[in-house]
Image (tube, rainbow, N blue to C red; front, side):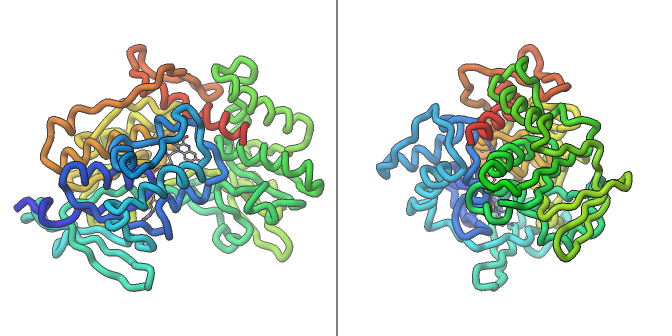
Length: 447
Ligand SMILES: Cc1cc2nc3c(=O)[nH]c(=O)nc-3n(C[C@H](O)[C@H](O)[C@H](O)COP(=O)(O)OP(=O)(O)OC[C@H]3O[C@@H](n4cnc5c(N)ncnc54)[C@H](O)[C@@H]3O)c2cc1C
């Protein structure tokens, strides 16, 4: 029996994609129940509310969510403006979560700790497809309760699990003991977290955009707080990738930012250590000593781990998943977004069919659907959940008709040294994805 009209559909996470999923399910006459681990919607974005997005409002709003918001008197932000994370929450996610239709179905401080089929473990096949799911949730009062649902949409993002500092995918020896010396991945060094960085010796680890962002903001902090010392460790043989293309960069703002970073290194304001693959952290009384595989050591008061994120697959252990072995994304999109080969996430719009697993009626969407790849865009996630809601409602034709609202101009930028492999006939949405890295630096530069 199809239970989708008698049981709710669980949405894990009340980030932008989880809330959009709920809005689409409601439009389809289906009943969502949203479990959010944090105290409010957008709890992960709350951690980086000081960072400006690189994509303008018009690509950050979901159509079904807007259709719900508009009758409430909500005013859409200026479509071309680039919001800060905090504005995305205050002007969009919070009002959306406050709508009675969404708010009454949202449970906050409710962390999903496991998903399975009711009465069936992973090895049991008989009647699996028609057996409801069981979602185990740890609620705000410490109570653990099982919820029976017809389908599950996992929109829990990747923010909660950052990649370790160790080079082999494992934590460096001593990393957990030194945890009190390791900051969050995107600290607000000039604002909320200033006291932890002012006048300190700070080691930033990583060569991506979060690292560039943090390094430049730290350099600004150091102007006002002279004792601040900035170290930068990258495991590669150079930092060229983080610099972008300088004056010749296809995206001037990215070039400017990369240029700024390069100048800060060249003038000695940032001390760069290349080829610094971290093997161990030694927590000492006054500081932490960070050791490289080749025996070098760096002493610092605090380490900023700009090492990327990975999906929490533990909660899905009892489900039959089909994941790409490298990026841990649904197998269908994995090869298209593998950062080892693609600097700019050349993934076409996709929906329920590509996101499906052997576990019927279970979908991973949003940031988590890209696994370890960093190039996810909200616009892609909104189309994913539109399609998934259609599929769950039995409207396979609508589910299969995937499209994205396209930006007017697509600029296929490259990370330094890499070439964008968007095919000649790539859709503009593909090219928008290509812009991700560069424009995030634009945002950072303006931060
Ligand atoms: C600094 C930064 C800048 C970005 N800028 C852009 C941009 O400009 N444009 C763009 O399109 N994309 C951008 N992204 C990428 C992406 O769109 C965002 O990360 C976005 O927040 C992803 O939305 P999401 O709903 O998939 O996940 P999230 O926003 O991470 O939401 C997931 C939610 O699930 C909750 N959760 C986690 N685990 C559980 C659990 N076990 N049980 C219950 N709830 C749980 C979390 O608390 C969180 O509220 C950016 C990302 C970062 C980090």
